[in-house]
Image (cartoon, rainbow, N blue to C red; front, top):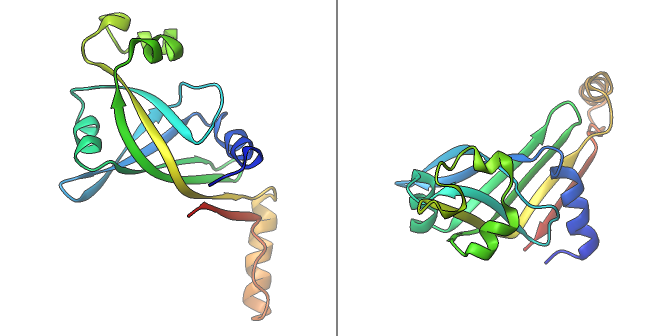
Amino acid sequence: MSSPEHKQKIWNLIKEISVGMLVTLDDGVPRARPMHLVQEAYDGTLWFYTKRSAEKSFEAEADRDVCITFSDQEEGVYVSMSGRARLRSDSELIDKYWNPFVAAWFDGGREDPDIALMEIDIDFGEHWQSKESKAFQLYEIAKSNVKKEHKPDMGENEKFGH
C-alpha cells in the first residue's frame, strides 16, 4: 500500500491536528463525530479510545468500513482516509496508549469494562496541502476564470492505497 516514507508524510500531516472526524454508517446514513489520536507514529493503522457502549462502536461493528478526515484550514492541510475498523480490549494495548487525557473520559480507569480501542486499518486515502496563502489561492482562481485554459494551482494533492 504505502511506503514507510509515505506513511511518515501522512503522519506529519495529521499528528498536530490530532482530532479527526470519524464517519460510520448509522442504518445506511453517514454519521461523523470527532476522535482523538492516541498514538505516537503511523504505520498504516490509527488508534482511538472509545466506549464499547457508544453508538459509533455498534456502527463500526455492524459495518467495518469507515472514513476519517483531518483538516487544518489555517495550514491548508486536508486528509481523508478510509479503512476497516474493529474494537480491541487487550489490556496491553490499553496500557500502551493510556494517558491523562484518556483517563478523564473513563471513570473506571484502565479497568473500566466499557473501555475499548478502535483500530482502523487504512486501505486508501487522499491528501491535499496548500502552502500558499488564501490571497494567492484567490488569485489562482481569478486567473483561471480569466484564462480559460489555466487551471488553478491549489497545492499538492495525492491519492494513496488502492
